[in-house]
Image (cartoon, rainbow, N blue to C red; front, side, top):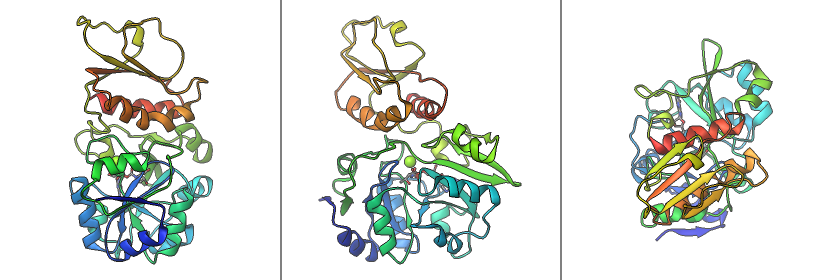
Length: 318
Ligand code: TXA
Ligand code: MG
């Protein structure tokens, strides 16, 4: 049975024994293991039912650990790290040879970030190795933003969830890599494109790649609830002929004209995209648990974190 506990020393003990522990971060909970333990990394892939070619993000406690992980640290990457670490930014950089292939899906690069969560930073500082951690959801399911979400997914397969409260940002890290010295954004996430561009100027966005994904977080279907879900520009325009269907709504803000919906979730009454992003997954988890026939989500404004939210909603409805 999975234990939810705030006991960091218990987590250290399990991780030192090459076990896997779910850890809190400011984005989503992760399934963490020692990057140098093949046993731990294999367990992560197994528990998550994730294909082995899909690489994991390496989590480090501070910037001085970076040189043990990567061979190069381009100037643009340095500027981004300075601006956003600890925080919701993953940098894809050329890996050192000692970083196991199983962590990087056989790639010559490795994704790294310093998470911004006091519990996990404290844990990382006390370990003698970095932690590889994908989001703590089964492949293709909604990411977890609370310890309860993780426990519900992995009750019988995970020894421990390290308690860290609700994830403050609630959406995965923004992923940026470099090709011929050009920065490329591979996954929209917790740091907006606009905020990135303030630091390094215009960035190429290559967020959609369905056939040969650079970051398989970009595979078309992802982050999906079990309930059938549609994404619309205006929920009030939604037409469903079957009057008996129980329909739930997910939208940004404001009142609906239509009254035929069973359940309505507003992500931010005050119209704050950061608040909306932080509640996105927990609200999807909730809607998915209500046994509705259908969820209709309304597209968010296509600016700032609205872009990241729309990206996740599109993937959830594919
Ligand atoms: O916020 C986050 O990033 C969370 C927390 C736990 O840190 N982690 C997370 O991991 O979202 P995951 O595995 O669910 O998504 C990481 C994405 C995957 O799509 C993976 O393919 C991509 O990062 N990735 C990791 N290393 C990569 C690499 N070397 N090259 C290209 N993509 C990479
Ligand atoms: Mg994920």
